[in-house]
Amino acid sequence: MVENRPYLTVISHLIVILGIVITVMPIWITFVASTHPIEHIMDGTIPMWPGDRFFENYATVLGSGVADAGGIPVGDMLLNSLIMALSIAIGKIAISLIAAFAIVYFDFPFRMTCFWMIFITLMLPVEVRILPTFAVVANLGMLNTYVGLSLPLIASATATFLFRQFFLTVPEELAEAARIDGAGPLKFFKDILLPLSRTNIAALFVILFIYGWNQYLWPLLVTTDESFYTVVMGIQRMTQAAESLPLWHLVMATTMLAMIPPVIVVVVMQKLFVKGLVETEK
Amino acid sequence: MAELHLNGVQKIYPNGFHAIHGIDLDVTDGEFIVLVGPSGCGKSTLLRMVAGLETISDGAVDIGGRVVNQLEPADRDIAMVFQNYALYPHMKVYDNMAYGLRNRGMAKDEIDRRVREAAGILELEPLLDRRPNQLSGGQRQRVAMGRAIVREPSVFLFDEPLSNLDAKLRVQMRVEIKRLQRRLGITSLYVTHDQVEAMTMADRLVVMNGGRAEQIGTPIELYDNPATTFVATFIGSPSMNLLEGTVAEGGVSVALDSGASIDLPDPRPELAGRPVTLGVRPEHLTPTADGSGMTLRLDLVEQLGADTLLHGHLDGDERRLVTVRLNGHFAPGQESVRVAATSAVHLFDRESGGRI
Image (cartoon, rainbow over all chains, first blue to last red; front, side):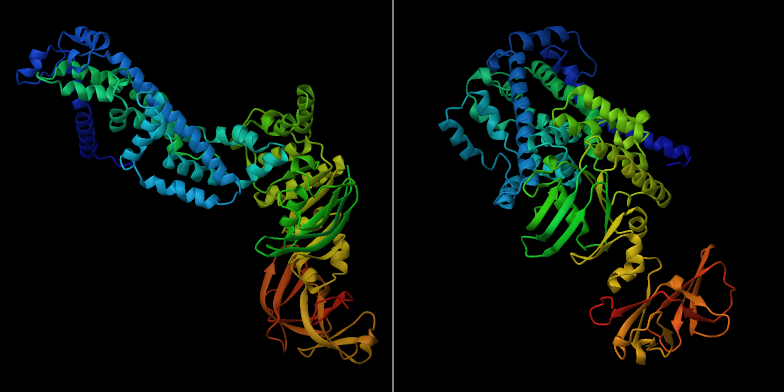
């Protein structure tokens, strides 16, 4: 807007600041709580400024872990989460790219049937098919493995559908020009289609990484071995410590640590992410 | 450098649609052939069949003495320029031109030599490091040409390459393409729906209609002796006036249904009494000073500067719009004008539209 109305400027700034406060406040409280000893948190007032126990608290969760929650160092859980989230994000993107490529560029019998079968599974979230999936994974002996953690979440209708829609917007002449230039299907995929999908891949990677990172129910079911626990599960277990009060300062420290990898992914990818969402580079 | 032969080429789509009804065409080495016709006449389909992007249902396509029906496009020794250029958006101009050569496994220095040479011909040297989205329409068009040139193909295929350009650039590129084709001497097949483009560029024209070749010939042959009313109205702008009439006794003139009469340059006694369609181009109708000829009641006068177009109806015929093209200016305010046909009139069969 090019209007010059001082009140409007003040009001819009107030609204923006209010929005920021609402968003940032919980994170700030989490951070503050993670720097205090447990007594400060349990005495009924929430401290608003950081305490002096930053290093001790973080050293505890990273080093020995929380004893009541199994004593697993947070670092191990973060690694598990990272492996799972990366496998899901990369696996999903790889599979859906190839599936969408097949559906859009090849004319094979029952092509549309395949597409509709993929499309219909869009409507089924993990939770709906969780029991049969669990049975399959258990029968294959994949409980307590990284494969068991990530593989069942990889097949993705959403990503396949998105890539299909994107491939349909790529001009047909491009594929024809590549054919005349002597590029076979795989060469066309590698040299033309993949580079063009770059921004879409980045956008999807951010979404899928966070999706994988935040998985809770599935890891809870397939892992019983503590060395495969993910950080989201770990936080939940800490808050449910038996026979004692939860150690909120350590829970908060773990939460802060669990937030870092998704933040890094978003910050690093944000340029491509925004580009992938708003712009079609053709 | 090669000859191109189409023998009875047909295209029938799986849904039964018969797009091309058997086309025969022999193109000599270095000839520039333009396929022209209205949308949906099959001209692009025919070109894509030569390129190998559409299968050939029947007949044979022969490039340089080799039947290529079963060959992949890359193996046919052709290069194609697309209407929307189809440049690879993520590659620099240089890589766009080099991509096909790299896929053939050509040596790096040979690729470099060819790309630089083509860039020199097309004045693209300063643009080699740019991406297609940093180029103007005309520059993209030139890159698409460059990508075709570096392949040094036997046959160039152009699929309406100028239709995405503005009018001024189109004229300029038209001249450039023609000059380039002469210089390289490469056999070319060019598809367009623009009859001016077709007339100016072609060594020979193929006028297509409904999947058939209506007439094949040089631009002047088609202009002077159109084989059918379709060709007659398609070639030349504004298009030829068609008037219904009957050949008079002795075949010396045609009595038009409007009541007027037009003399035939050569008497056609064998046609006497036959109903015909008479064609006369707007530039072959001239106003008469002495009051002879037919009365044209004017509806619209278009002043183009060099010429003037008079649109109107002949007295007694409300149905047919008749156009007259005059050299120079026309005094405004006149409601009708007397016109007469010069000797260049054409007779067509009323039923089939064929020339008689």
